[in-house]
Length: 155
Image (cartoon, rainbow, N blue to C red; front, side):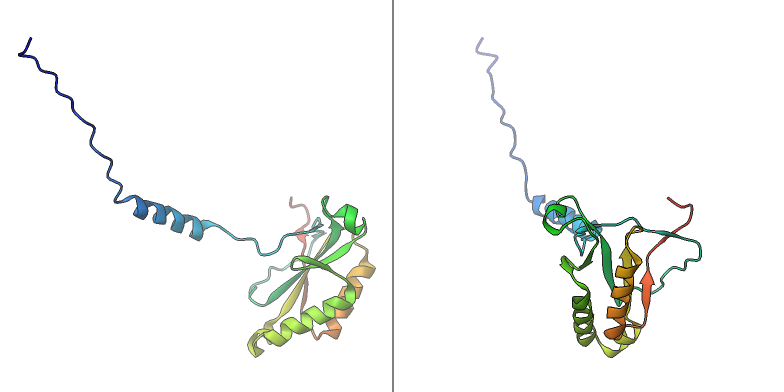
């Protein structure tokens, strides 16, 4: 029996030298692929349908104004009527003029010439509110206004 000795073999240690490289590679992948949302929508809107639509080509100097009913979480605080949202806060019509004027003051002269405002309004929004926003934009000196819509028959 002494001829058969039992030898214990140990499992070699795991080499973790390449682990930081792997972690940074995965992190870099997620950073490049992830799209960060700029604005959290607080209003709910269904885009209206249209027949004569053109696609916007350059979107570098675009400010978005959302008009619609508050989302489920905000309805009990702000009421059920249509609200105006710029960035992450609700505004009223006179504030739209001040906000857009401040944005124009921060832009370069080239961007001011190219600046346009995109109004994304719910299809059931009263046209009077959209007209009031348009008049406020006119007072702020905005000449290019886009209205977002989908092609009729497209879902």
